[in-house]
Length: 305
Image 1 (tube, rainbow, N blue to C red):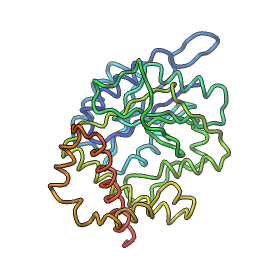
Image 2: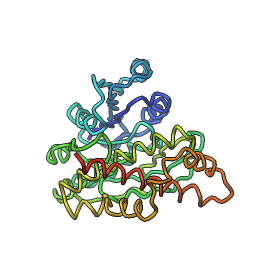
Image 3: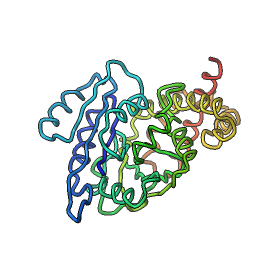
């Protein structure tokens, strides 16, 4: 069995170099006849980046033949990128990670070993969110984000044949959000077994510092996810609402009247300053409320289309 690691990316050269360093530096990849063999490829699908991503990948390709590069002509979103990666993949097993995720040096081995016991499963790995590259300590790993929904592409694997039978990722709505959850629903419809990697398949998601520019990007993403959540619920109804929580987002936004204060400059400045406050509960609570506001905003705008 061979694995294909698919990584969509857009203007993340600053962190992609570290992501690739870890995924290309795997110690053991599969066991065949009792001997260890290197049996994987890494496919980076560049979603029309305008930074130095192409130059970075070109340089790394000369150093490692496992690395493949697909560059799209126009930005189409990560799910289009993943679909293209699936079509080009030569591996029996597809492993998805994001370009801001760092993995343990036995990451691919862990995925391959578990899939070798059963071909009819989805392996959902957990993710530890951290602020910086330097704080990713792989010697001690306990996830602080439990990926227990249906199919979270920061760290997940399934055989290529099942992805093809599911018809790949849908491309409804906006660029971000819920196409992975929909894929999980389609794979559950194929009666696959779900396995969760807690201590195995270690991965760190680098959130970056809580600076205003990073927070603003995060909230734009939340709004886009809200838009996709709306289309997801329109397509699948009640079962989708269990994952998308569109009613909850709008309700919280209405109750707290977030439209009156969340988008004020002083609010996001206060959020940034609260990250290192002794009152550690302020930052996550306020960020969560603001997240619901932008999700609700995306839902409202999508409903008008």
